[in-house]
Amino acid sequence: MESIQLLNTAIIKSKEKKVNQSFEERLNQVCNSPVIEVLNKCITQYAETQKISRDQAALQVVEAIRELDSIWSDYVVMEGIDRLKNLLRNTH
Image (tube, rainbow, N blue to C red; front, side, top):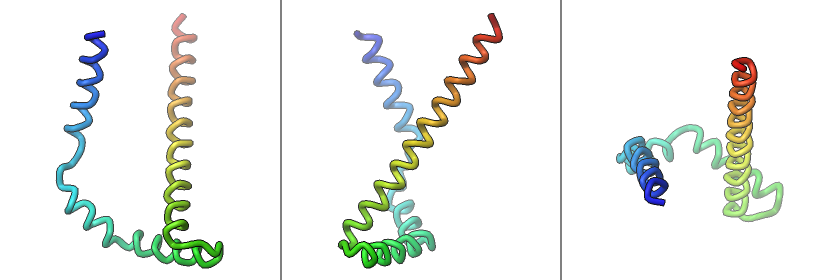
């Protein structure tokens, strides 16, 4: 159990090092980017066509993007697992 706790702690600490601490600067850059302006227009149009609030439209857009990201993450993992299986089969 101690080794699992140690590994979990190491994983968390390794992620901390990757996180850029300039959140405010990064947030400002993203919020002022042309892509956010386009997304804002899309959300407004989507809300109007679906007759829902802009909040609901924004939430649906974010959920759809997260689902796409999740699907592709799963796909990439499965591709990696499949390649590892093939490598292991070919080495025996």
